[in-house]
Image (cartoon, rainbow, N blue to C red; front, top):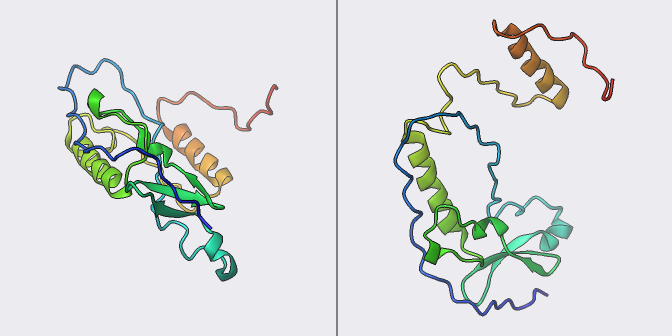
Length: 166
């Protein structure tokens, strides 16, 4: 039986994220590799054997209207909801939010990112895109090395990988 979850914190009015800063001269190219995933509330529905489905992780709503994950009858806050980047200082909070609020903000941010001049969601001019869908790790490495070796500016690479510490 899931514990009754009460945080004792009223949900604040949520305002949109702050606008992006004005564009400036690009002095350095930065590639983000710190992107995050957020499982949707229905991620585990129908994915467990029928006899275990009632034990699958699920999202429940608290008395205050927060949404939290429950696993083995223990509530866990969605830590990604607590992100404060892009929020006004007085709108920062360290408490759960709701999936639809976060997803709406993500879609709005993605749309802004796609349409700006230095978009992190659009491949850079001259970028090589390697689709590794369906490849195992060994094939991914082989494909990446083939692309690198084929580039005219690539110095000769040793044909065989070296053992660590060799």
